[in-house]
Image (cartoon, rainbow, N blue to C red; front, side, top):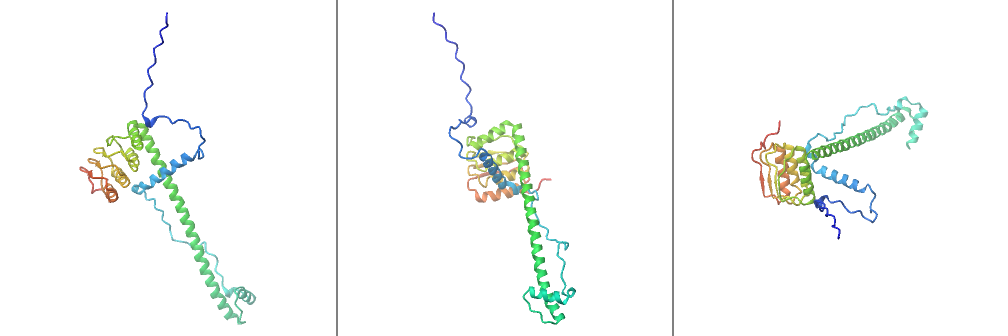
Length: 273
């Protein structure tokens, strides 16, 4: 008799479009293999720069103008020279000796003093430029360390809370619901703020009653400087204070999209202890 066909297996579950694997391209890449990583690093650095002044880490590099005299060259005195040396030194400088030793010594000493003053000024400027360069390099290293530390903290927190990670991916992909609320801490709030910087899908954001710090509020406020989708922002019931107010005020001067901000039950006028 005819054979019964085996039961068909159920279709595989559908995956969210933002997590579907990309098809391999048959054409060679237009850029070196590490160009994408370099681009991501540049993007992270550019985004970090939009918020880094909020941290108040005291990273300003002050160049100390105080200088010691140990580096200064020894000063020359015409009175220590012989008559032959006086004549030779004057002639090297295009000055004809007059034959009177005291007068020639005075003339040469004036020239030596001018040269010494110019030499000291040049060496001081050279040392100052060297200190400024060293301070700049130290500042760049400190900035990079801070950026790497933030990225590591955010990665660790997002690995702990897959729901927040999923929401942030939706926001970055432009697929998040217009009204969004999910529980945050200070680190994941920083991640959210960076995502909101260029997001165009979130219209109403609720971060109320989460115990977020004043710095977190400042990050959210700064994000509104560039965001052009959020209309309603509920920030009530947190620990927001002067930093939040300053960042929001600066952002709202450039933002004409936000229409409603709720800041009730925040200290606002007092810094956190």
